Length: 339
Image (tube, rainbow, N blue to C red; front, top):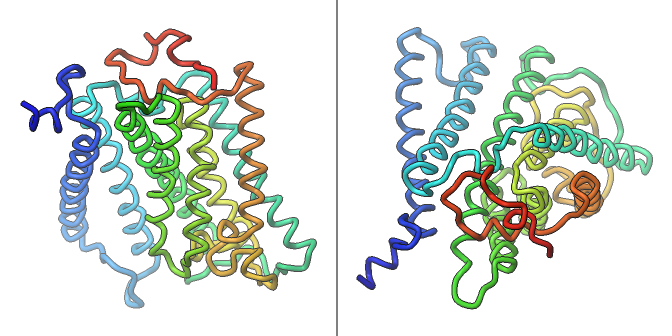
């Protein structure tokens, strides 16, 4: 019985946190491989080329890339649906998708915040002479500008949804519940989970082009920044909106690298002149001091927005407390604990 208790929580009647996380990874791998196999059969059936090759039009290869990112997104969302029912024993919406009026307001705020912060970074670098505009409406490959632009927009929408769903909605929540044991209070469990999920987020980007120790550290800070809206509201609205426009405006509007990658189509094609320590260089602004400054400013704005909308902004200790009932049945006392 003691051995079984390491894997099964008899009080909650579900697997323990580590088992749930391992199980979700297993489910995700199965779904991804299944959907990939189905897509591969369809592509071969219709004789659609699978890779970018000079013999084939860019339009076909870019379409395949779009299908690829859609497969990743669907795999993750289906995994969370299955995990919610069979592993976590909760509703899918409890991962941060209670799509009410306030959710959509927060989402729009996140969209505006990401665009505004990246616009501020660009204006500051431009005024300081750290960046110059070489041309406008350009593409990094043979594709038309608008095709690359909208393809990238779809990409970043998907990335914002699935990265936040995994990093914050599932990982942070399960870590918070898992850390709540012995003498660790719910408040500290959430803090540890917030930090732990941010470390994972940073390490997952450590293999990106032009990554460095500094860029990885900065992306851990970015994980804290993106997670702030979640630990203050228990919803993914602000993180998803912020993630989408931060990436899209960074790459496809202002022409910066996005975590080391080159955007397909950019409104501005730029040349950087400033020190990499400040600008982030070939990795992008989030790897530089200017990115850290924007994250700090953005964190203050998130805190202020949540306080303005709710009357207070406090760490949601309820993230560390498992409730088998739906979110809508929680009492205000259970949800809105003060810090």
